Image: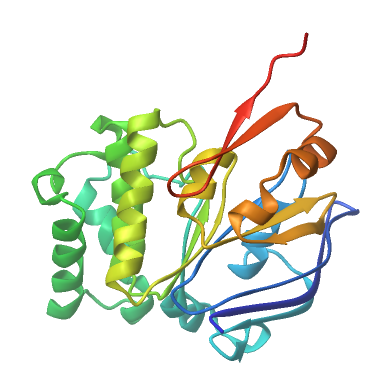
Length: 256
């Protein structure tokens, strides 16, 4: 298994946000965590990324998360958050180069191998022409590709995506997710994501986990999790679920 989470709990500011969550992600698999606001999705992802303290056990590629150094973890796991911090004025090349930090010695400089990894990441995501551009000058979809390029340059084999399509229009949502899916298929890459858009999440995930109140309420294939009954119970939503070519499509239904 790439990720094995057993009975994980997380407390933040005195409140239990994640409660006894267990799930697995196989190598090369795409698992998406869904759930209403406040369900604990992002907190769970941050626990896997080593950004918050947790109870229970998280194993990454057969190694306990508790014994991994920050540098070792960064060589295994890359995380793209909802709002990555971008230093003002930073150009694309320098931002993607930050992904090589786990391989550069303290006070050292990047090597030829580091620069080659960055060039390859820029090329794979069609960003070479933007290398000298400031990030703030790019569109939302272009910036999201830059964030993925940094993760790719990092050389990690587990990609954590926290709401990767936030603030993107539908065209850029599809572009970004299809790009991640292609990178996964090219391998070796495993994806654990959180998403709000249920239809697009169901089209790309191999399996889904529904969190509600910090606990696992359902898990399985998208067709097993995205049901009208489950979504009504845990989202309080009136929806119709239609079977699509690549997964179930969730359509909101207006109240009479």
